[in-house]
Length: 104
Image 1: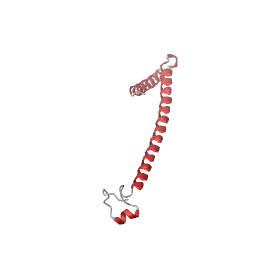
Image 2: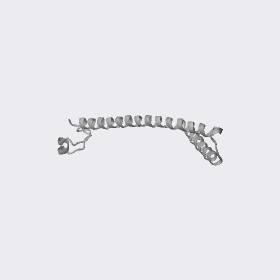
Image 3: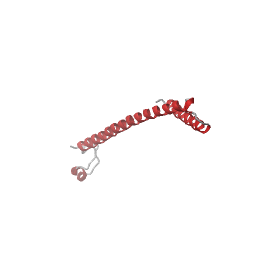
Image 4: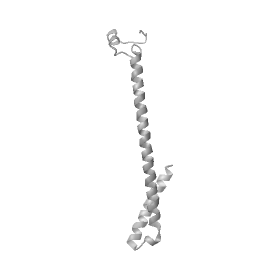
């Protein structure tokens, strides 16, 4: 097939290493392969994203449970324990606020 846009020498064009104008099927095949690789990468990233979302949901549930447990007055058995639990509750509060502010 001859195309005036092709600037490849005849030797290159005949070996199949030419441009998209003198080797259109080769160009189509490479483009198709590139698109398939992109689709596979999108699928992989979407699956990874879903797994991360599930992990975040589990962490949010754990933070909420820890926060709730650390605020119960009956758990505070001493000054040091109360201070530690207060700090845990504050950390949970900050983490949950940051998560909620992020829109998840």
